[in-house]
Length: 174
Image (tube, rainbow, N blue to C red):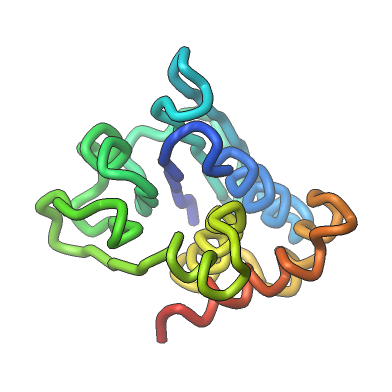
């Protein structure tokens, strides 16, 4: 088993943090994982992507070539980063920030940012809402493992809100 996941959005949305947590969760469970990231020179507000590869065996090439899942948190990210998504792959979009969903046979639309604002009062938690959604959709890392990693990675004062965000995302789809 080898799965390639790309998280994309704009700088400041936290997709890199979500990817780091996802990859760390896989490592905690004894899987092989690599994580990489890139963002535009504008940093906050510019295009941003983070990629994770998870495998049961050694990963020889640490670059995502044909992602199995692409998360797009903005229209710009959707347009820029979905093109090499495998035909059977899954495109997950923040439905309110990606009004023109690229033509792909497998799309899941969730109002990720709105769920963060309605549930927690801040869009700041949208990345962890998205992380919960990816945990559920990918079935690559256990929810309990991700909870442990989130608790270690976020500021102590925000642990409770981040746990809520994780569960909001996890339960956003059936």
